[in-house]
Image 1 (cartoon, rainbow, N blue to C red):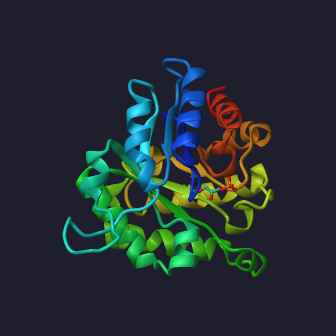
Image 2: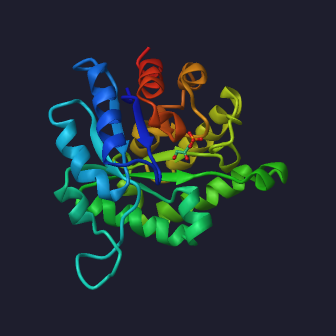
Length: 251
Ligand code: 13P
């Protein structure tokens, strides 16, 4: 049985004040054991503050990216060991914004996933097709390529520790959510592909859906057999909405 997971990707949003309000708001209404794993991924500069604020709350900390190198002369970069040092357990890799705006390749995403896992972090590996790719009917091919490079280069053994997040690019921040059926269809393909790594990877890996998830569409998505939770952008910046999504994952 895969334990559901809901992660909030704050992207480049927040301030010290907003971090305090948001983390306190989430914590005040979260039951001690809410039956699912909850993760917040603030910008790097607020990780330490978030870690202090979370204290004993049943919420884990994640980063939005990492560098593949160890500590050293890499100006502007953040190493896996630094993330561990401030209390991170998770790290998002290969978000479509990193791929499209910062030129990350399938190979660099695979390398980041491998480094994260080797250092003891749990990577949340994002895959997803653009609107154009969906219209061209090549969604399955795109996902197969993105995940295939991870399985080949990082090695199948990173699963089921590593998570996969299916985030159709056309659904991110647009209000256009994939239908339950569209999302389930791709999640089933991902699970099938994970069996190339191992049967344990296929059965045990948690596959999250991301893209305009809100409290009112979360329950339908999370009810699908291969959807094990969500990677939430905009709605994770409002405590009430994020809590509503957590509740949907736990019902
Ligand atoms: P939205 O929930 O704002 O669509 O963002 C999804 C996302 O990119 C999470 O990583």
